[in-house]
Structures are given as structure tokens and as C-alpha cells.
Image 1 (tube, rainbow, N blue to C red):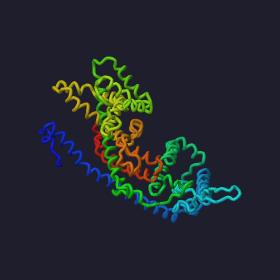
Image 2 (image 1 turned 90 degrees about the vertical axis):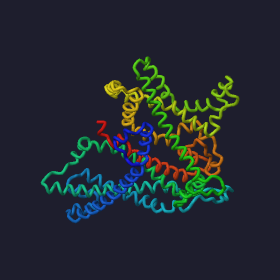
Image 3 (image 1 turned 30 degrees about the vertical axis):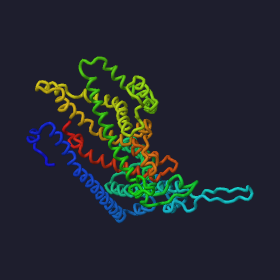
Image 4 (image 1 turned 135 degrees about the horizontal axis):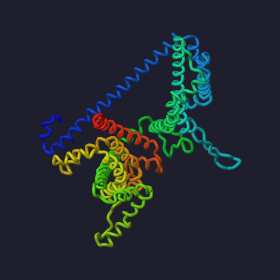
Length: 511
């Protein structure tokens, strides 16, 4: 779609202006996608160039360094110890001793077992004394995969520490050549709570992120390339092994052995509903929450604190309790159907959770009740910061309330809350609580159930993943594949929308 000039745009009717904006938004998506991939390619190119520079610096440092520096290539910390930096030298040396000891005692074993994920599974032998079969458990595939990943992380940490050790020697030579004095151990300790305090403060959270976030993510990705499931738990029943891309072929195959709906069709159906749910769950809450905040903030409204308190009370009640209660209220024998039938308004119970369309509409409407209080509180704070002079000037120029909203309030809100809308949309894609506690994914989709577990019409990708990994077959490998695909979908949406947000592109406009 060609871009119009300001004069051409002003000549359009309101409806055509809206169509033009929507068209321009979708027209920018291909370019935004291309820009995202170009940035990724640029980052990879920069990474390769950085590795080349590091390799060149390592060689140059060895060639031009003194004997203390050269020996530090084999004995980490030797240069620091020889130059009087005892604490640094001891830490480097201790890390190298621990690493070598770990690799000799267990690390090399875990890495050697990683290609096979175990060679001897559980065995059963007859015990003549007890006249019974005795189970013997041998290799543990789960443990092998986990400790192999840990070992790889340890090797990466060792390489990084070794590189820091080389840099320390190069820097020490440069300082001494300039006639300056190196820092003592006491000064090193003092710098940890002074000029390097930010590093000390961030070290613990960074370690936690690596151990509790990055490591599980890598493990989950690797599970997607195995046959890890209930029948192959890796220890008690059978070992699991690498299967390459078979699991991805299964998920994206349109063929089904039983003649029912394939995994690919089921995935596409659930993905489309997930995106639809995320869209309505995000924007209904956003606009209705904004309207409620505007109504409460309006001059002349009495009991503002009371209305806000009533809305906030829904936040104070745990979702686990409120959602389960609402689920029972709208059941066939629930209080809602009972009241409507008692009043004679309906002859039979409404299928809130039994019909696919009814169930999908119901969860969206109930989610509005859950989300409006959060948006009301956030919008209240933002609306109070909009200068009153803008509205006064608009009224003098003859703007009606709707024009004031579309020209002042909404642009201001969208500019401020653009990143929030993106994170809210992504959060709703992975909104497990509302769907699982209200419907459990019901009503069941019979066409998809035989192909890929008990799948319902209201299931999101995240609830489908949960069912696959906790069912009787416990298909952890397929759950990992779905988890990877959720990440891919979320990443693509985030990259595209983030680059189109006005609050990101024109941040200085607000300032």
C-alpha cells in the first residue's frame, strides 16, 4: 500500500482513514520481519567477527607476553601469583583444579554417554534364593542428559574464565610497563563493594538465571530430539534415545495412521484459537478497563474510592478460588442455568461449557471480569497525567467527547502502554489459569482426541502441552516440540510488533 501525504490523508473519510491505517500496519509487517532477520544476521556476523578478534588477541598476547603470561596459558593464575596478586591468582588456580578434577572424576563420563544416552537399561534376573525376579536399574538417560548439559555449561564457564585469565595478564603487563602499581588483594576486595559493586550485585541473579532459566530451556529443547515419554522414562521402564527430527515430523505431518485428525491439523486449530483468544482477551480488557477508569475519574462522580475498592476486591480473591466457583456457576446444573429456568426464561440449560462456541465466548467474557480491575488501576494513573489544558483547548475548538477521546486520550494511552499491550498479548497466549480452571479445555474435540490426547475446543497451546506431558502416555518429547513452537510464535509476534510500536520508534516524541 502506497503511503499518502498528509494532505491526501486528511481528505479521506473517517472509515477510509481507519482502513488506511490498518492497511499500512499490515504492509509494514514484511519489512519489519525482514529487518528482524537482518538484525539477527548482523548479530551473528558480529559474533563471528568478535570470535576472530578474540582468537587473534590470544595469539598476539602469547607471542608478545613475558614468561609469566605464557605459563598462565597452562596454569591459570600463575601470572597473577608471580606479580603479587595473590587473591586473583588463587581463585583462577582453584577454578582450574576444580574443573580438571570434575572432568576426570565424572565430567568426561557424562560427555561420553551423551551420544547414546545410556547403553544398559533396566534388567530382570531370577533370584533362586527368594524365588522371584529382581529388577536391576543401570544407566539413567535423564541423569546422563542433565549432567551432560551441566558439563557443557561448566566447560563454557572454564573457557570464559581462562580467557579472563589471559586478559588479566595482558592488562598487568600494560600497567607495569607504564610504571604503575598493580592492585593488591585488599584493593581487589574493596573494589567489589565500590567501583565493581554492580558486578558483585548482579553475579547472584545472573547465576540464578543461568541455573534456573537457561539450563532448563536447553534441556527442554534437547528433549524434543529424543523419545522421552512414559514408556521410556530413561531409568525404570526403558532408556530413551536420540531420534533426530522425528518428533517435529510427527507434529507437522498431515497424515494420521488412524485416519482421524493429524497432529498438524490439531496444532493449526489450537494455534488459531490461541491467537484469537489472546487478541480478544488483551483488547477487551484494555479498552473496557480504560472506559471504566475514565468513567470513575470523570468530574462529578461520587464515591470514586468506593468504586475502585469494589473493583480491586476481585484482585484480592485468589483466581484459583474465583475461577473454580465461576466454572460451577455456569455448569449445566449451576446457579445461572437454575435461576434462568426458574424465571421461565429458558426451557433447558444453556450449554456454556458443552458447546464449542458458547464455551469460547464464555471464557472471553469471564476473562473481562478478571482483567478490567488491573487495567482500571493502570489507566487511572496514566489518565491523571494527561494535561487538562489539552482537553480545555479541544473543547474551545469545538471537539466533542468522542473526538477528545480519539485525538487525545487514546493516542496518549497507546503511546504509553504500547509495550504493555505486547507483553499482555504474549501473556495471554500462555494464559494457563483461566482456561484450565474454567473449562479444563472442554468441550472435547473428538476428531483431535484420538490423534493427540484429550484435546478440547477451548484448549490453548499451553494447556495442550500440559495435557500431553501429564497424560497416561506422558509424551514429554512432543510437549517439548510444542514448547519450542510456542516460543517461535511468540518471538515472531514480539519482534514484528515491537519494531512497529510508536513508543519504541518515536520515544523522543513523548519526551
